[in-house]
Length: 240
Length: 240
Image (cartoon, rainbow over all chains, first blue to last red; front, side, top):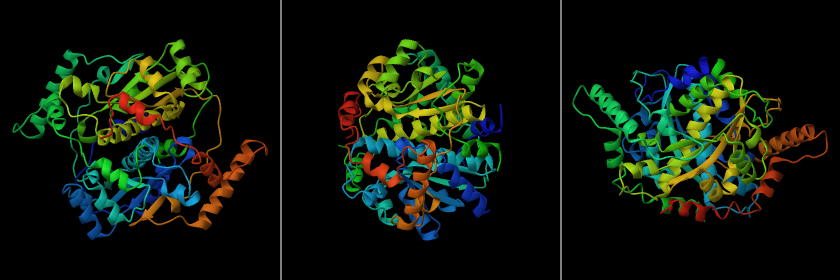
């Protein structure tokens, strides 16, 4: 165990923040940490939009499905796959391949996780906002995102005003496969389901409980943002 | 500055490793760190395949475009978007949406970056292997990946046998946008291009040099893995 591993294992998503601002020195370090992440083929195809104006934050909070902490967090960063930069350099760049969407999504994840961990290591907390993808076209319009730029997710950062319980993760045996993929172990899944039920029971003072299997069944009984293909296409992510 | 931020800023990709193995305690911590990452809507849609057998490593090294360190690294982990788990729980789960591919790619990135940083904090080094996507169908066959599981990238880990220079990143002003997206600053791009030329000149003892703009123009003059859509489809990632 060392301080980095402690920071990583101590993660919980923070959705309630104090009014304290993040100093420009701290923010600058957080962005430098994001930039230090690996980049696929050195393409560096991620841009970060820092949104500070209250009216823009409120709109983004609404677009994300009324997540008020998008508005109340000290900082809000939008991580975007960005191949517009490359097109500015090479106007006839071959773009619109699904491979580039994969690279943009993965590399956004690598950069953002560096940013979040850097923040957490300084006593800050944060939460990812995938909910921006509820309204990608409105987000693009608000942030002036040109063709070949797509908002993958947001990141709220600020000083925590809550200490939530850590949410139990799938046990290692269900996540890590040795040599070849193997099907779910029903016994281990059932134990995890019971653990999640217990977690929700405690969090809600006994008012509700749900196993992970129940949660999954509910979530995947619905279509997953079926408009996404059209929204990606409009930004030039043709997925060919 | 603190140890976590030092670890993050000290990153360089390591492609040459000593013979030293990674202890099972260390590996276990690395996997726990991966599991501690945020997960979109608590879907936990990432599986990690740990490949240890020499013959499988050699095949993966070949599939990745003859990257020998895939074979020589102490550990090799393949991060996969995994919605098969959910289908086992809910056989009629609504799958094959491009949104799920985005979630799988982003969440793989978050988990893998936790794993790499945990490793780096313990004196290990590593490198991501996007090259697995040169031959996704062969990777799927070798790792027995069922429908709704897709190999996003690999991660080599081991004790470093090299200390490469840190590769200069795009300057902060070209990555971080305030409030709204803005076009490239030509002057800053040109300074970065010169910095990259210098970096490659030093690394090659003057034998070659290339600016970032030249590198980008070369890379994006070619189609980006145009077979990817078919490969994703075959695994049930229909991108609807």
